[in-house]
Length: 395
Image 1 (cartoon, rainbow, N blue to C red):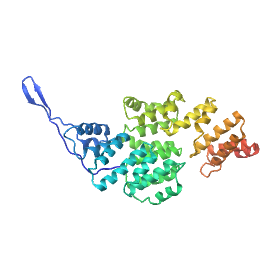
Image 2 (cartoon, rainbow, N blue to C red):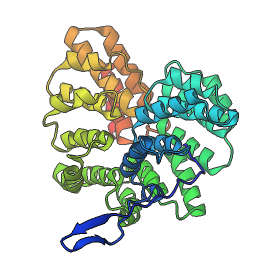
Image 3 (spheres, one colour):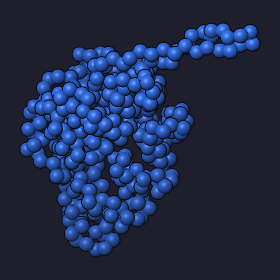
Image 4 (cartoon, rainbow, N blue to C red):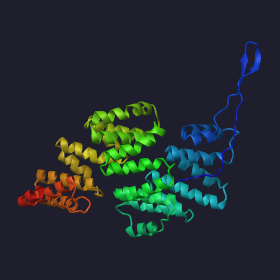
């Protein structure tokens, strides 16, 4: 989301060696340049180099901007936030640049889940496309207390620019409008064939739409070019899990998990740790998933399923007590949990809630003709004791 058009200063270091025959110049060895790290997406190397330069005479006016940029793209949003905040306090930038820095600070807060701070910082920035995209995503992220009127205000300001369209597609994805997201991504891919990451986005949408073979086809081209992409490998493993079994999925992850064990970059580690428990049919669930609730979105739902399978109904109910369902899967799970809990404590209120959740899914235009949709409608009729309607539905 954040780009600097400035180019880093070029530095080269010549190393000399002391041999038995006296002092002789060795072959020239150069420290990789910052632009090489950035171009190769090696943000760990970039941050290491910039942190070193920061404490030496090599530091210049571009050191902090590049450090913040590299830290942000590495996923170290706290470091990026601290660096941008330091730049604002120093006040060495031009007035318009400082105003833009507030937007970058807002982006860091957003990725840290600090939505109030993100909104406050964003409104200090210039009224440009980045600010509008950020405020739109903030409204989406808040869900429960987000103002739909405000969200539509920002939505109407979305333009045909590539960045805005990518942002709109991600909003559709987050709202489970996977077909709409797919249409945008495919249109952009036709226009920008070298934007290979779009293939992963399309593959994600096809995975959510249950087109696992098509998702794998989209991933194949990307993985030929980027064999070590954690996100793509994880998605490939998830497709194999749906098409085959947990062993096939785990085999896809093995190489990457070996590499990540020694890594300090924990986003992929968290994702892989979560999915390995799924692939192993819940093995070590209670050791892994509770710590990932709030970090990996599916962790809460999978933990609830684990509790249900092990007849821990009260624990499952407590996990979902404050969850406002947003997707068909969440509505279904709320229905199942309320039905089980209602039967456990003989609560007609919970049974009625379960019936309503099942009906919402079963009667929805997007789910009514799917297997989960029909199962929900059958569950609704069962709770209403309308057995004849279940028979008709099954025909």
